[in-house]
Length: 243
Image 1 (tube, rainbow, N blue to C red):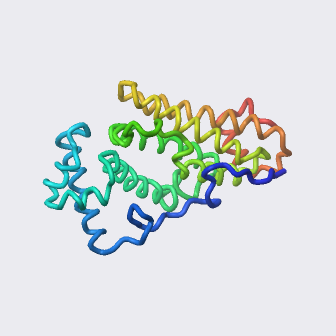
Image 2 (tube, rainbow, N blue to C red):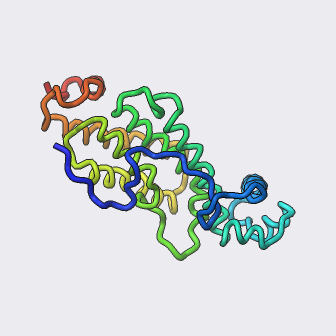
Image 3 (tube, rainbow, N blue to C red):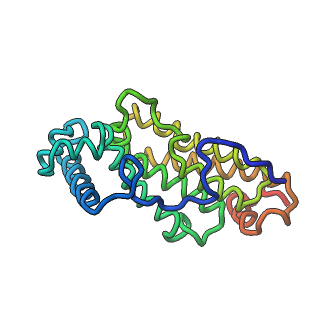
């Protein structure tokens, strides 16, 4: 049976929607501000590729972009804001892949397979953006964890509801988001990256999800869970799938 929704932060809608562009104050973006944003982000990406995150400064970005320092400050606020804007921009592209890209990450696959694919894609995204993610920290806040990546929590919650496992999906989504985003970013803040990093973390996520779903399915009648979920679990472990 479904549990009442908890006031977890942030819960958001049942499924994430692409946010409208806005400035730092939340107002709709003007045409000239949008142009400056595109110039600054493109310039910041060039500098990141050439110099690395440590060498990017507000003054250096303004000079290379040929825009005033006040424009850069109004757009980003702080040096860390430059990297947050880069991360946010790529997050929007990632979100579109989840919402409308090909399966299994996008629509069209069974919820279980989408949940596994989401975790693997999220791990690839975070490891690929580890330098930017670390540079968003300016010392005034802790390392970002699951509570600060609402898309993961909302999307995981949506897929758990689709599987109808009979669990408290609010709590389970929060826990799975923390398992995915929180420890991963803590790991990335200090661990040396190797070609095997993504693969090991991806295998760990898939193993966690299959074990969680398998443990919850026996609590419900076979007819309660969608057939696609049961078939996916049977393919994953034929000898242990409940009858």
